[in-house]
Every structure is written in C-alpha cells, then in structure tokens.
Image (cartoon, rainbow, N blue to C red; front, side, top):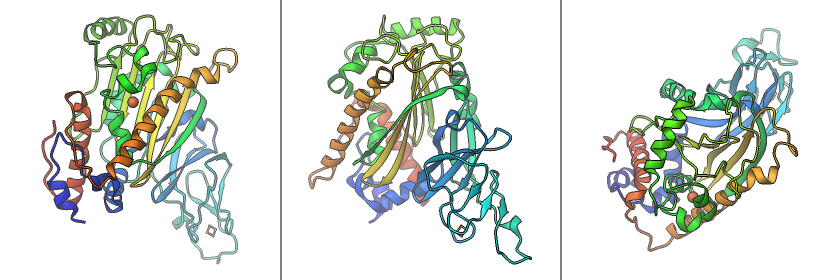
Length: 400
Ligand code: FES
Ligand code: FE
C-alpha cells in the first residue's frame, strides 16, 4: 500500500479513500501517529474514589492500569509485569492495596515501584524494575492519558475546559450507569458522525425534539445569543472554543428548546441539578477532544463517550452517565429515564455508522463531497490527514 500517495491524493472536502477506513496498514498508522501520540480520555476520577481503586484501559496493543494512589492522586502504569510480562491486573476494575502479578506474584506499590519479588537473588535490584509509567492529566475529574514519549501540550485543554466543567463538580459525581457497544465500523466514522447534524433530522426525532436547530430547518443563532447572555449572568462559561489545526479540542454551550429542561424523552429533568447548578437552564455543554473524548452535559447529568479502535473494522464505544453526588437512585433519578435519551440516540448513530462502514467496503465506493453543514467533519478529516502526513514526514496542508 502506497500510503504516502494516498495521503497526498486526499482532496479536502471529500470523504476519505476506502483504505483509510478499511486497511489494517492504515489502522497501524492511526495507532502510531494519533492514538499513541495524542491525549486519550481514559475515564472519570469518580470511578476510583479510594486509594487502591483502579480500572484498566486497553488501547491497542497496550493495557494501562489507572489507579488512585495513597495521596489521592491518580497515576497510570503499563499493565505488563517487569518479570516476564504478564498482565498484572486482569480485571477491568477493582481495588487492591498493592498490585500483585498473578503469574509469579511479584508485588508492586501503587506508585509502580516493585515492592517484592520472591526468591530472587540477594543482589537483585528491585529499584530498577518498577512498572513503566504512563503520562496522565486530570481535568476537573476527567482522566486523560498519553502513550507518547513526549505528549503534546495539554495545559491549554486543562485551562480552557476547566471553567466549563467546574460547576458540574465531577470529581465527586456519582457514576450512575455505564454501557459498552462493540461496533463493526472504523473509529473515524463515529467521529465523523458526531461532528455533523446533516443526518439528525431524519435519524434522530428525539434529539431534534430536544435541540433547537438540530434538524437544520430552523436557526438557533438568535435564541443561542439570548441564552448566552443569561448563562453568562449566572456565571456559566459560554464563549466557545474553536478548532485550530495545531489543537484538538472544542467546547460549545447551546440551548435546548424552550420548555425542554434536560436530555430526556419527555424534556423533563431526570435528576437533581448537578454540582453548583441551581436550576435546569444550563443548556447543553458539548466538549470534544480528539481522538476519543466527547461529553454532552445538561444541568442534571453528564454523559461521556470514549471511543477506542480495535482494528480497522471495529471499535468500542464506552458511555457513562454521571449525576450529582447526592442523587439517590429510585428517589432523585430512575436509571431507565436517565439513560434512555442517549441509548435511543446513540443506537440510532451506531446503526448509521455500521451501515456507513458496510457501504464503504463496496467495490464501487468512492469519496463523496461533504455538505456545507458538514464543515466540522471536513475539519476533522483534514486534521486527521495532517497528523498522518506529519507522521510520515510529508508537509501538512492548510485546513478549512
Ligand atoms: Fe509477573 Fe512473573 S510475569 S511475576
Ligand atoms: Fe447522530
């Protein structure tokens, strides 16, 4: 496969050539130049509240242990034993005072240092066999890791996401529900789908009922400006973060329809106002950080989405729903009502993305033109192409 000419021949404004979606060699390039280079959303701090609580995250070909240390910080290590390489944590989540490899029982401290290696020679130097560390940053209770040796700057993301996220008090939030989907599609098609609403009118009646402008038949601009003045007066961040080529994150706050108070099928709240919110009028906060992080937050819950590629033709999507720390199931929220909006909307999208992938495998697929309302998809695709070009030493091109 001549990947250089594939990259050079990409025409901005058109969908990608088939190989970008289906070829395993391109998939390995995606892993190398994007997934092992940028910052990845791993999960939420609220999932590991106590020292020793951990979860693992598999990003091809690695497994990463993310755990709460004794100082209530969060650290991350490669999940490969320094003896003969076994996985140390074999479960997706758990809690342990120390990490013990199941093979020959080497024991590691939470900070990754080797605590004990039984029956090793007297002169064995434990200090040189700690677990390999992984770069980690948290933003208001959201955990990001980078598998790069020298990750790109993340301070800007922390600085810019902070004011948006603070009112939700995510560090203490309650993880009310989680759901995983394993999808037969390329990871980029999920991203493309979530960067446009050209499909929303036909595909998402529930979503369009909640969000003004989603069907592209009406403009939300004037209403949005009015609401932004109200939100600013209440101290909510509204300014919006715009995509730049050397950046990889966005933020936007947009209004729900008048009388719609939450992302729910009936438009009514589904839980207590979250954190500092006093009412159900914070609109929707949307945050994105490429390649794998999305949240949509309404006044009473935060919905997170983590995309993880498995191969060119498959990926997982992990969803979680966070509510206020004091919300009690059965009293303040009902799990079905909390999750049904994104279950319905998400599953509509997964079907579209799997259909998209199936069709792209056709002998007669060829890249097609994006519509004006798909400008953010064009920007994503151009960002993607530029990251691969950078990776193979080709000059990058200006983006839309
Ligand atoms: Fe971990 Fe042997 S591989 S103790
Ligand atoms: Fe959609």
